[in-house]
Each structure stands twice: as C-alpha cells, then as structure tokens.
Length: 273
Image 1 (tube, rainbow, N blue to C red):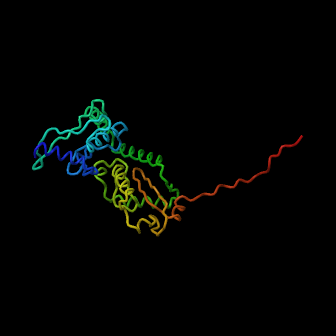
Image 2 (image 1 turned 90 degrees about the vertical axis):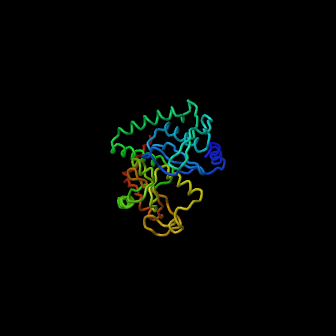
Image 3 (image 1 turned 180 degrees about the horizontal axis):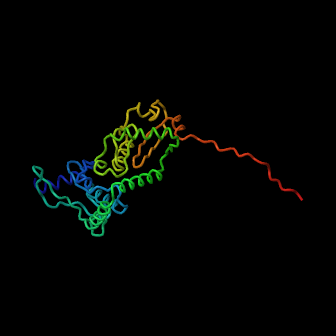
C-alpha cells in the first residue's frame, strides 16, 4: 500500500465522523486498541486509580488521536514510519504535541512511568482496599437517587446477590486489572469498569436497548411487576450493583423508625411580679 493510500484512508476515517469504538484491551491492561472506521490505533489505557492530571493527559491524547487534532495545543495527526506485521501493513500515526502539552510524549511518559512504579509497590490487599475506598467515595458523592439498605434481612439478600453474580462475565479492563470499581445492573450478566459502564449508560440514554419491556418493570427484589420502580444502588466493597425495586420493597429496605415520644414533665412558667 502506498503512503498516499494511507493518508487518504486516515483522512477518510476522520471525515466520515464515525464514532470511535474500543476494540480490545492489550498489554496486560496498559494499552487499548481503538478503531475509527477502518483505521485502528493503540492508545494508553487510563489506570483506574490514575490521579487527575494523569487521567486528563491520557484522555487528551486519546481524543487527539481519535479526532485528528489536539484540543490543547492544536497539533494534528501525521504519518510516521511504515512497516509490515505478518501480512498486515501498518504505519505510525503520530500527533506532534507541543512540549508543554500534557499529552506530549515527554510529559505523559514521565507521569505514567511514575504512577506505574508507585502502583507496583502496593500489595494486592492494599490495591483492593484503595479500590473499595475509591468506590465508597464515588457512591457517597453521587447526586443520583439512592436507597440506603438498613434492614439486615435485605443486607443478606444483597450479599447473596453478589455471590451469585461473581461468576458473571467481566469487561477486559476488569479482567486485566480487578482492583478497581466493578459496576453491574442487578439483572445484567456482566460486570463493567467505570469507563465501560459509562459507555453503556450513554448508549441507554441514546435509546439503546438494555432489558426487555417486562424486565424493565419487574422489581429486582420481589420479582413482581410494577408500573414504577424506585432506583437502588448497592455497594459492597468495590462492587456496585444498580437496580430498581417496587415501592413496597423500597419501604422495607429502609424502614422509617418513628421518633421516640418524650414525656413532658410540665411547663416551666415564669411567675409574674
């Protein structure tokens, strides 16, 4: 394939306005393969525990690669070296970011290397404890409507539900790096990381199907049909399960305890002089 054909194919991929799609996770979870039209790109994955500046730099680099232009330094995608992988011709697509751009090779490599070095020094237990704390913080700060499960009977149900769902499928990010938040709908048979779960929720907002009409109106606890379901978010350590329950189950999940009556001993009246 000639260089001109590569350039034409790359330009066509960007001009068509195709939605970028995640193809798969590689390199033990460190990199991802993304596609735009018929063009594929290898981009660093965002670590689940990445600090804000590192996450921004990686997402900026991903956006620049998948759209053809960096929104920070205005650098555009160009072609580098050509090669051959088995029978597949490949070429290097490079974005020459400015040196002060967060997504530049110099800045990103330094941050990513330091983060991976720190992560490698943590024990497995420390990694999962950090994931649990991070998940708890996200759920606490979430503005969405939640039912706090305070009835011990339903806490047992939630733990049994988690035990049953642990054998479900998981996205490639969780398969390569389990020490992060696991997200799933109660009625779903797959766990997703924050990134993949956000993609799923976005597709639902845009009208994409999730469950059939019957399941959409079935209580996730008593399995009875209801016209309206109350949202419920269940967090156990770093596992988050989202579902819907009928009004009756919602009341049982979080029973209202009436305030104690205080017996009045009499009125304190001031004497008139």
